[in-house]
Image (cartoon, rainbow, N blue to C red; front, side, top):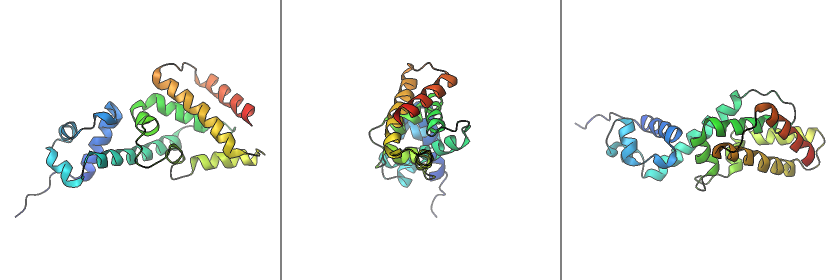
Length: 181
């Protein structure tokens, strides 16, 4: 009779996500993950071929987490891209390790920054649509300019160089939108 599997892939994946969230994706090694999951490394490699698969799984979970974060972020601004920018900057501040894994890591397991930001619900496409409704002639180009501005602010948050409050951030995002439009 074979031994009953005591830890599932779901439990290992959850432990890997918790580690990436609290310590950073680079800290998710087989030994550390085994310790965090309360098992040996054997069950990890029974359900995953290698640690790259674990990291890909963590990235998928982080994408869902970011999408939920964005969905739950207050949408108080009517100007296109401002709510998205506020949520993105806030995510960088509150979830810096996940932000790094998703948006600053060169190895995004085949996904572009745009795909991660757009998510499954079309977050970016929705904002591009709003800009188009407002009469913007090149909403995709406008998004690219806003994205560079927003991503820069979020990166400054990660390094501790961004000290604007929400009121000032809203003002800056609205001003950038109007200038780029």
